[in-house]
Length: 262
Image (tube, rainbow, N blue to C red):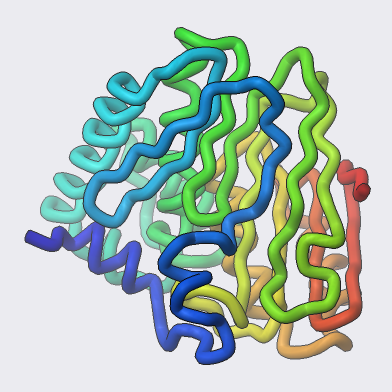
C-alpha cells in the first residue's frame, strides 16, 4: 500500500528530467558524494524513504526503527490535518503537534513554502540525531539532503548538478567544529522533486534539516536562469537560519555565507 506520505515523497513532483538516464536515477548515483573514510555504511529503506547512513558501527536496526517512528508521526498528522500534505504555502502552526511536525511547520513559514517541502531534510536530521546516542560520527543522506555530525574529521560533499560541467567538480568542505549541520539540495533539472526553477543545484546549509530543505526548495523556484543567481543568493542570505548557499546553473556558480568550496 502506498501511503499519502509516499505519494508526496515521489510526488513532491512534477515531470522527471528527460535528460537524466533512468539507470542513473533509479540507482541513485545522483546522490551527493560524501567522504566517509573508515565509517560503516548501510542503507535503510522503508516505502519511499531511502537513506544511506554512515556511522562508527552498524546501526541499521536502530535507524530503521527511527525511520518507522518518524514516518508514522508524519502519516498520522496528515490524516488528522490533510492540508499539511496538500498545501504549497505555509499553514498555521500547531503547538500540540509532535516536534518533527512543529519543525516542518516552522521551516515552512520561514522559507515561504508548503510544510512537506521539508520532509526529506527533516527525516535525515531527526534520524541522525537519534543515532548520535550510539555513534559520535553520523552521516545520513536522504535523496541529496544530508545530516552530518563529524566531530573529529573534515568531510567533503561533492555536489551533483546534473548535466552542468561543474557537477561533482565542486565540493563543500565541512569542518568538524561546524557539525552537526545539514546540507540540502534542490534542482530544477535533476530528479523528481517539485521545482519551478531551472537551477542545476541549489544547496543550503543550516543547523536545521527542515529549514535547509524548505529554503532549498523556495530558492530553487526563484532561479529561472544564470542571471538569477546573484539576486537569489541575496534573497537567501536574509532567511533566518540559513548559514550558507551554493547555486549552480550550467557553468555558472554563486556562493554565500559560511561555506568553503574545494
